[in-house]
Each structure stands twice: as structure tokens, then as C-alpha cells.
Image (cartoon, rainbow, N blue to C red; front, side, top):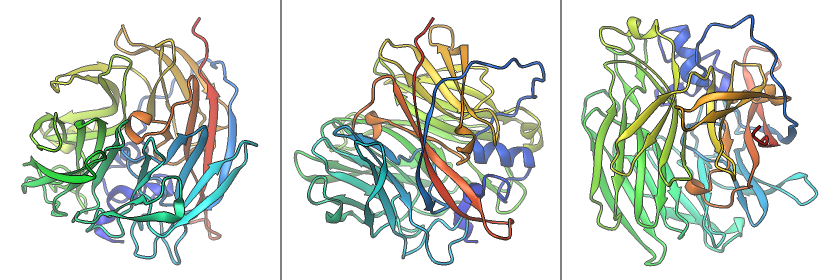
Length: 446
């Protein structure tokens, strides 16, 4: 396996990862699960009606990758999704390939999902502008950040190269309500910890039809999983390190994703960034899960975290706990330990400004939804089970995020998408994946 596949053995469901040094870390880093003791006295919670839909039964097992990516949008009332097409001789964790194609699906008015297009590039993350211009970030190797867009709005046959100057596939992207586009990618694939690197910001101004580039220094090394909120020419970004650090992880290949930086730029055509370290544990793990914009206009980040000051064994002995952070425009962050025993979480807000978190208790179990109190540290006040979502075993779950990826929200109706991995005939490997969609309505608060 290419060393740059990093922790993407997660496509096997987390059981075959080889990157982190302890089994407890393997599960947490791959699924985002929070390790809390099972409560045998836990009472059964009420369930919500859920409509589950098989979008496609035969997509790449490597479709789901990266907390910061997006694969589901709603545009002009229709849902659209992307997935990787299966490549010849593809193996789980084999994320790249020059022959990679991607599939685009649309849910028709009759409720059926149908394949709308095959795109001759990888679709790692995508977004849609208000005029129907679709953008796809689809690196073909670990050494590029190739980006495409439709020359003709809403015409998937018109994808053409839009940006090809990137030298690393470690990235994040967002689109603004004005149709502006921002791509962040590592300047270099040099991944040794504490060898200085940088993040390159490539900004497309839709009015000027012009690109601007700027840099963010990252002294800890390479960063590459960036969540981005773009509005006009202003951006706020959460940057996650993608390092190899033998001291923090003594087992080859020594991968570590513990560091997080926060960054802001008020005019991307000028490129003056404020870039500050935030979570910088000497040892430990940070698992970012969701970034959204709240009703107050501020950024909210869901993540799991643990740290150690003396050794990686000290950090690994601690539970990986769930947090929500409120990030202000000046990059100050209010941090709230939620107490939620969940991973792969997504933050939701209904039209009445009630807050919820959806996430996974454990592999092979149904997803759960919690109503949380944003005025009391996002502590859970009600819990619901989502029947039929036990098949959602992709390590992260997509939802509509129009503030990051464009398109439309769907009011109090929630859409979730991920994959279910299918074992090969020998039962020892993952052969392919099913792409699943689930829909449910947020409950009326009591």
C-alpha cells in the first residue's frame, strides 16, 4: 500500500487499519467513535421514522474519505450525490489512480435515485454555485490538487480543468453564496513532523473571473484536512495536521493528526491571513467531525479529543471525548464538552433554532439523534434512535451543508449519506461499497 494512503484503511470499516499504534486508537481515529464504557442499564430510547434509500449498490469502497469533504448537495429542489467508480484491481485504502472515474446520482421527483453522469476524474469533494456551476476537486495522485468545474451550468458533460497548480492532494474547499470558490491545499507532500510546510489558498473571484493565491505557514509540518466557511471574499478555516511523527506514534508508518490551527482572511484577493495554533497536544488524538455556521453567524466545530503531556501511552489510556467549539471571527474559541457517547457526528439546527447532534454510538448500531441545549454547553436533553441506519458504516457521514458546499437546505428535514462496505467472496477483504441515503424530520421539541 502506498504510504500516502494514510488512515484510509478506514474504508474496510476500521478493522484493518495499520496506521496508529493501539487498537483503541485505531477505532477512534477511523470511525470517530468515542470510547465510553457500555452502560448495561441504558434504557431504550424512542425512535424516529426514517426513510432509507439505496442510491447505488456498487461504488468504490474508497468513496468516503475526509471529514472535510462533501458529497451531497440539494440544487433546484433535487438531491445530487457523488461516489467513486470502482477501478480495475482496486484495493481498500487505494485512494488514487489516474484511471479514476466518479459517478453522479440525482434523486428524481418520483423518489428514485438514478445515475446522472460519469465524470472522467476523481470526485473527492464537490460543491455547486447559485447558477448551477458544479465544482469538483479530484486529485489524480497524491501530488496534485486538480480541480474541475462545469463550463455550462448544470451540464455534467462539460466538466473542464479549473485549477491545476497544486502539488499535494491534502486539501479542503468551499463555495460562497456569490459563487466564489476557495481551495486550500498543502504546499508540499513533505510530511515529517516539525519540518515547516504551508497551506496554499487558491481563491476564484466569480465576479472578476480571476484567481488569487496566498499562503499560510504551518511550522508543525503538513496540514491537509481543512474545513472552510466562505462568504464573499472572507474565509474562516479549521486546519488539521497530516503528519508522520515517530515520537507521537511509535508504530510504523507513524501517522498523527493531533494538531489543529484556526485561520481567517478578510480579503482573499489580498491574501492576508490570521493563522493561529489552537489544539497542539504533545501527544494524543484529534478527530474533527463537522464544521457548520450557526444561526448567530459564528462557526461551530464538532470533534473528539484527548491529550497526554508525557507519552503516547498516557494519551491512549484516556477516553476520546466529544466536544463542540464555538469559533468567533477573531478565532477565539469557546469549548463545550458535550458528554455525548458518539462519533462521526453532525450538528443540526431546526428552523426554530433548536440544536441537535446526530452520530454513531458504535459500529453496527443504528445512528442516534440528540437534542442538545446550546445555552447549557450543548448537553443532551433528549435522545432518539434512527432505525435502519445500522448499515451506515462508512467512517464519516455527509449531510447538507449549503454554507460550505452551496445548494439549498431542506428545512427541518435531515439528509444523511455514507457507504456500507461489502466483503469480497473470501470474506477477508472489502470488495466494494453500497451508497446509502437516509431522510428523517427533526422532532418537534417538547
